Each structure stands twice: as C-alpha cells, then as structure tokens.
Amino acid sequence: MSILKVARMGHPVLRLPARPLAATDLKQAATQKLIDDMMDTMHEYHGVGLAAPQVHESLRIFVAAIQPDTEEPLPPDAEPMVFVNPVITPVGSEMSEDWEGCLSIPDMRGRVPRPRTIKVTALDRSGGRIEFTSHDFPARVIQHETDHLDGVLFLDRMRSFSTLSFLDEYQRYWTKSGDD
Ligand SMILES: [Zn+2]
Image (cartoon, rainbow, N blue to C red; front, side, top):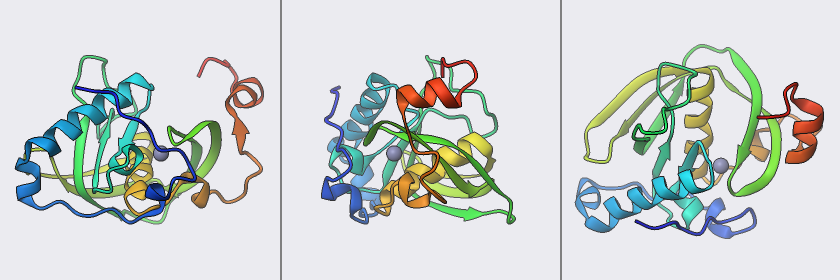
C-alpha cells in the first residue's frame, strides 16, 4: 500500500465531474489497490474522508472514517467505509451549519450549511449495495466527499466567507478548547 499525492485547490482534477464505476471496474486489482491507498493516504494526513479526485483519479469513489449512525469518530482499528457511485437525497428541509476542512485546501476552515439529514445509496468495495439514512456529522462528511465527485469544494457551499479561517486562527478564535 502507498501514500498518494493529494491534489490541492487549483488542480483541474478537483473541478471535473468524476466517472461512475462499472461492476467490472470494482473487480480490477488496480481499483482495489486504489481504495487501499486512499485509506492509507487519509490516515497519513489525518483526514476524515478522501475522494478519488483528490488523489488525481477522476472516479466516483470515496473513503470515510465514519459510522453512519453516530457522531462518534471511527475507532482507530476499524476499517473506514468505502462508497462507490454514491447518490444522496436530502431528507426533510432542515439545514445545519458547521465547520469543515479539506485535505485539498490545507490548513483552512470555514462554516458550511448543508442538509442535516440525508439518505445515501452506494456500492461498497465488493459491489454490495449500501443504503442508509444519516444525520449531522457523518451526513456532512458524506455530502462533502460526494461534492468532490462533482467537482465541488466546500468553499462553493459557504454562505459567506466571513468565517473562512486559517487553522491557527480557527483554533485561536473559533474553538473554545483550541485542541480540535
Ligand atoms: Zn475535501
């Protein structure tokens, strides 16, 4: 397994709509290795999620260290979730706003409004069907990563840039504990 180079904002791959995968693509050893490498890369850079376009592969895949039903972070020894060809549907009209960051926009944070509850359908890495409803933190991660597959970055979703902050200033002025 390998740690991959992460594309940073300005690289055109981050603005392309990514290609859906066929069942045969998932059986390819190269696709499975890409998924393993994406997990390694996400862990190396302490990300909560990573989408294939962020490692220069314009494919509709992302990995996320989340549990669908809880705000709790995934235990360190647990396998991250893999989403292939995800489709998101908002449930209800309630929005919530919270902080986001992105490995492709290093050391910045901003508040992003998103639907609070979503239904997601996708395939897992072996082609099995995933379908669940999620809210708050895991729903936010899923929406952020699915946006990457459509060439959308969290900055595009901000209502205004008044909260856009460098990480040091975010920790100094916007978090109570400063240890986020
Ligand atoms: Zn991102």
